[in-house]
Length: 224
Image (cartoon, rainbow, N blue to C red; front, top):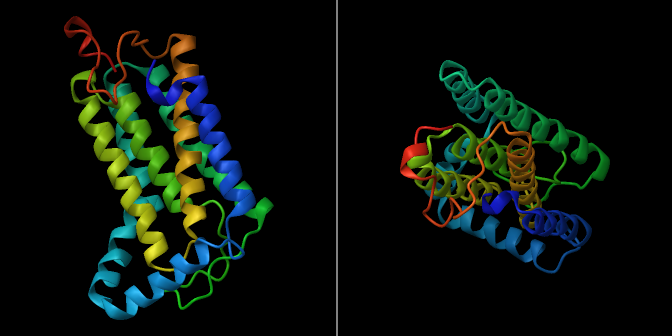
């Protein structure tokens, strides 16, 4: 069982999401100063801000859904229909959750000179942070062959973290929005892994975590 699918990890991620929701936002003593500093940084380094505006598209629908679709098709070609359904279901369910939670929670976005203006969209949780974390991590842990899984998991985490940070730098999300988005994305993937392992769709890895550089034994390296 990987780290993300452990019940205690799922509980911690749910708690992080709850705390970021209840205590984050415009009244938070940390969120507001960070957003003010991000506005100063955009004014001081406009070139870096423009790069962040381009990089943040890695968390957009075109890339996250596109990568998930390619990975799903790869699983179908490799004759793993259960894993393909699990991957697609995880990514799509997470996106629906983000939209529903945004509408329900109703947190406003920062209003301090954002570089990207999204007047019709709400803040919590960050869709780019949640969607990139869920899509990239799900592809790494569900669709990637075991011998490459550790490297792709690390790459997925780094890319999703950078996407989330770009949202704060651009002034379109509070830091707690991004933290909540990361937690939601990880939670959805961890829950999917737990369901997949207990249903037999995914192989159980009893000895070592993927994050700890250990995958399946050599004779199982080609499994999804």
